[in-house]
Image 1 (cartoon, helix red, strand yellow):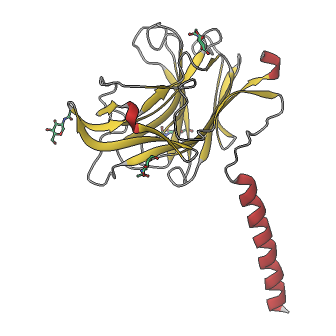
Image 2 (tube, rainbow, N blue to C red; image 1 turned 90 degrees about the vertical axis):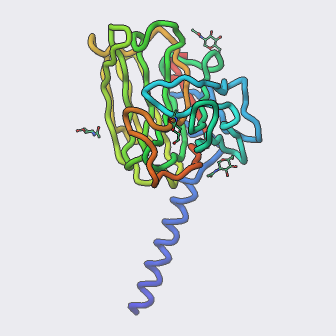
Image 3 (cartoon, helix red, strand yellow; image 1 turned 135 degrees about the vertical axis):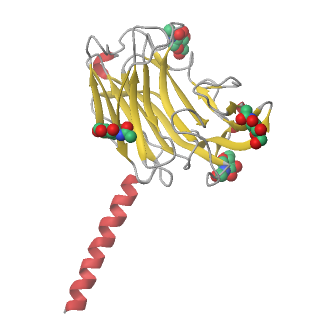
Amino acid sequence: MKLYILLIFTTIIVIIKSSTSSSSSSSNEPISYNGWELVFEDEFEGNTLNINNWNPIFQSYDYNAELEIYLPENIVVDNGYLNIMSKKEQYQSHNYTSGKLTSSQRFNTTFGRIEVSAKLPIGKGYWPAIWMMPETDACWPLAGEIDIMESIGIDDLIYGTFHFSEKCGVNGQEGGNVTVPTFNQDFNLYSVIWDENQIIWMVNNVQYFQIKNSDIFPIPSTIPFYIILNTAVGGDWGGYPDEQTVFPQNFTIDYVRAYKQESNI
Ligand SMILES: *[C@@H]1O[C@H](CO)[C@@H](O)[C@H](O)[C@H]1NC(C)=O
Ligand SMILES: *[C@@H]1O[C@H](CO)[C@@H](O)[C@H](O)[C@H]1NC(C)=O
Ligand SMILES: *[C@@H]1O[C@H](CO)[C@@H](O)[C@H](O)[C@H]1NC(C)=O
Ligand SMILES: *[C@@H]1O[C@H](CO)[C@@H](O)[C@H](O)[C@H]1NC(C)=O
């Protein structure tokens, strides 16, 4: 009798497990959200980066006392994924190479729901980011900066931040964080919902932070923003790679999708 009950119980668990794993597994079908229309997607199918969507960046100057040089060849689309590779190798005066791509002049949006499914590198000195910058020459951060996801590799904290100030070159920021224990093992969905009243940050569609429109932090509402994906190596926030930091590693992206509220189209 006991064994029989145990058997039924195990069967139920197996059924529950298989039904949740099939619904949460990566799919090529964009998630449909009520009231939102898909306006941009890159599923990274095939084996080449779609340059109608992205600009691979060559950049040898550093911000934030970072160590990397960004090379287009470190951006590889392979088997349905975008891999941004970070390597410990000498290139010009740099000891690390990494990758950065932007959607500037390819895809930009004012307002929307922007989501990226990604698996992150782990270790001190890794600084992967999913962020958005305004399509303007205005001095940073006068027109704002939306950081959808940042990690500094040393723990399972994920950060969402909005930067703004009225003074050129002077940082102002508001941000939140959340633990994502599987950040380097699984694909998690990092996203924001941005409208005229607020910006909401989510992981796997669960909100962890929000800013409201205010005089101090005005929600950007006129200039379109483009998407940036990159991994910095080192820098004055998370610190520098140490003996434990494993190279090479990839920042792997399954897809990037953007939606607009139907009432905003
Ligand atoms: C690169 O590594 C060498 C040897 O460890 C070091 O002397 C040099 O300062 C490093 N360069 C940079 C730009 O960090
Ligand atoms: C936004 O991107 C489009 C291409 O999709 C481009 O034509 C336009 O100039 C960009 N907007 C700004 C303000 O740069
Ligand atoms: C994470 O957010 C909490 C508030 O939710 C804050 O108290 C804490 O300082 C933040 N942690 C870091 C490391 O920024
Ligand atoms: C990183 O991605 C590249 C390109 O897809 C792949 O060849 C390589 O094996 C990956 N490296 C790691 C450490 O997973």
